[in-house]
Amino acid sequence: MRLLREPLLHFFLLGSAIFAAHALLSGEAPRPDRVVVTRGRIDSLAAQFAATRGRPPDAAERDALVQSWVREEILCREATRLGLDREDTVIRDRLRQKMEFVSGSGESPEARDARYREIARRYEVTIEGEAAGAGDR
Image (cartoon, rainbow, N blue to C red):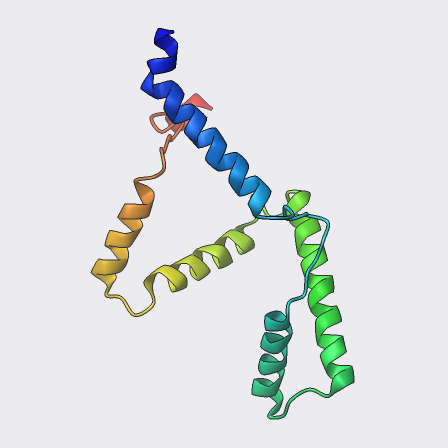
């Protein structure tokens, strides 16, 4: 009966209940094999088209924009599933550029460096073979 008074047990049971409630109330879990094209995505594609062409797309062009985005989404997901995004310097460089843009737009270099240090604290870095000399190979 002492186990029933243990705070860790209470914490575990409460956490499990919250997790179960969230799973039940949040509806359908996202499926990796399902591509959803939202109204917002279609509007964004149309806005990009209008910005480059100076006019909104007609119905056929809008359909082509959506189909092109769906093709890109499917191929990107499959490439990621196959691990084609790993160890690719071009992709890594683009992701780094996007992260620097998102996390540091409008900030001073000092503020960007401080934000990087804050993010970097979440990672454990191990550098293997750092002390190995050229003759050790």
